Image 1: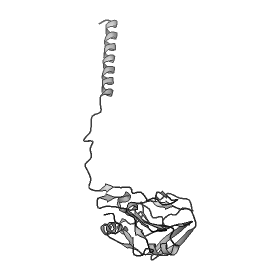
Image 2: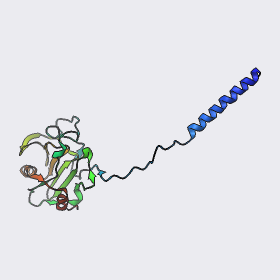
Image 3: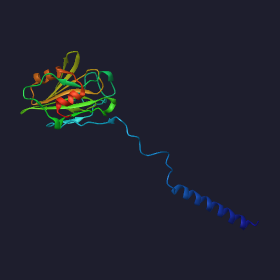
Length: 213
């Protein structure tokens, strides 16, 4: 075989390999399995906080926050606490005239779960002059800037943050997630009394009382 013939054969071989490479790269990738995942019985949900005048929610997280921002006493968060201690809570006391607001309420249903594999609830009450929001579990905290007062509600430590006519009580009950009572246009003593009256309740009964069945 002459040198010219060998050179031509090598060129053809290289050209063939390049064509194979190009075809291989342009071919659609092979699927490793079905793309549709099986439906799960539990639906993971990230609830949003109902709107309140002049208030913006901030994520409840273990990251450091400014000293003027409320955080649960004891740094309770979705990553901390005993999940077995999470319960749905309903107030046994409400100021006169406070009524549940179903349109501003969000309570996990039987097939729903929040971050951290715990439930969640945001229950709103309105009166002619005020608003109360009670939140627990995998929810976010309101962001209020103002003086922080440390109090005790039963056996639980809590923080009270006041910003004008708005007030936030953040309670550390040892469960993961948040537990708070927010009030706008509500007297401090009444809001503290609401927070102190929170008692465990079945989530189905909670939805019934809140009008969101």
